[in-house]
Length: 185
Image (cartoon, rainbow, N blue to C red; front, side, top):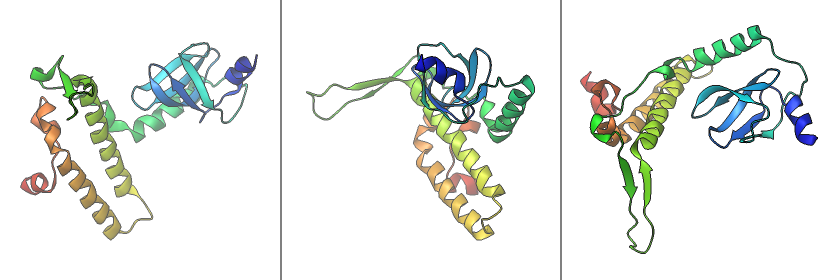
């Protein structure tokens, strides 16, 4: 019974975990579903009875069902914030279906094998989040111009540290570029 009450009362801002989609936050409540934004998967509707879904911390407890217009408002706000994240970034053809093997020095230890697509997705997410961070720095009202420039230079150096992964990208325009690459433009 406690689970039913929790399902009915968890509101916007509640932190959740899904066994398949990972961590997320409830951004909307419908009659039979939660509208959840997941860190890795974006916005999905999850049935309140989904056995793979768990509410970690309930916020804004309510029994109200969100209207479509409120959902649309929430989605528009998120889309504006994460606007450039809808870009599809293709993996290089030679890496499709491949695996990355992390081999420990000690031969007695088991290596870790990761599908390259999974690793590549994480690299693209890092790049996209750095872009959002840049946008937030540039539009920040309380930072001085000098602070913004210093933070931008630091982000540029982060991009430079990630150039090793450019080999995974299918198209050069998606590559990371650091200080050297930025000066060449």
